Length: 134
Image 1 (spheres, helix red, strand yellow):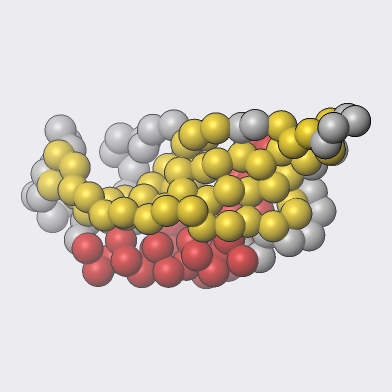
Image 2: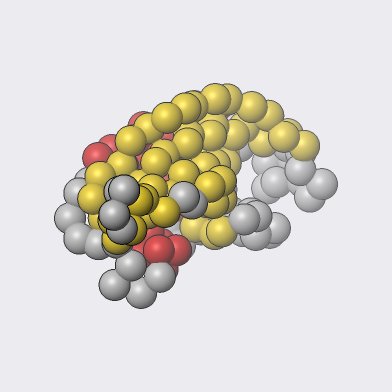
């Protein structure tokens, strides 16, 4: 499988994450009209690892995890679960995950949420995930 497929499958298999977002995990953008909370994954960088002699066979993908929710409390809860999920990425095809950055933010949503709100809470976490393509 590809890195994106491997990471998505691992996220869906992590029960605490699946219990919060169900199948609302997408790449690049949040699917409009789907409920919250939701998780959006974005590839920030993907440098391949090399030694002086050859390619290592592992790639250190930097992934931005955007936890979207209707309020800050729900976004924080999803952030906590994302951090726990990152700690599980140690078995093949993964070789560890390291949190590099985290930040909070708000975003305007053009479509009102079921509560009528148009302002959403977002927490972003940048995680370096080492992966070997299989």
